[in-house]
Amino acid sequence: MTGSDEGAQSGAVARAMAPEQSRAARGLLGWSEADLARKVGLDERFVRDFEAGYGDPPAGQIEALRSALASAGAVFTDLPTPGVRLDAKGQGEGTRLQDLTTENDR
Image (cartoon, rainbow, N blue to C red; front, side, top):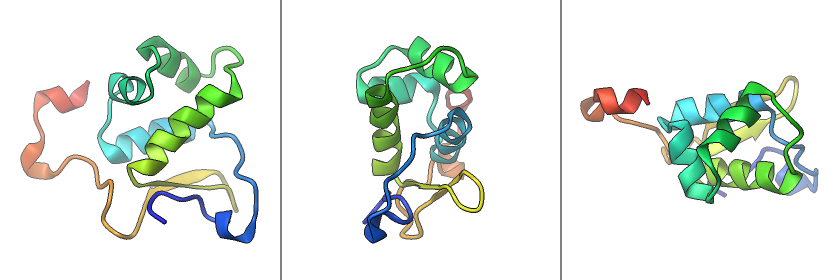
């Protein structure tokens, strides 16, 4: 399954996404905070605050962020340490070199 979490097939419950995993996934996908917020219908400030570790955001909103990132090809790993990678099928490969502009830096 594209963007699925490792261990999901074994019935393991996915744990909440860490702020660092969100930042890393966005980086791999070439998404800005605004891009992610727009995809899930949340305010950009929510994404920025979550990724900075501020507050105690509702689990449902974190799951919405994680789901959007996973749908684009981010695979979240928890063992041996929390991490994120792109799926092996070439989906969600982020911004291609020939498409890079100064707009991608935002």
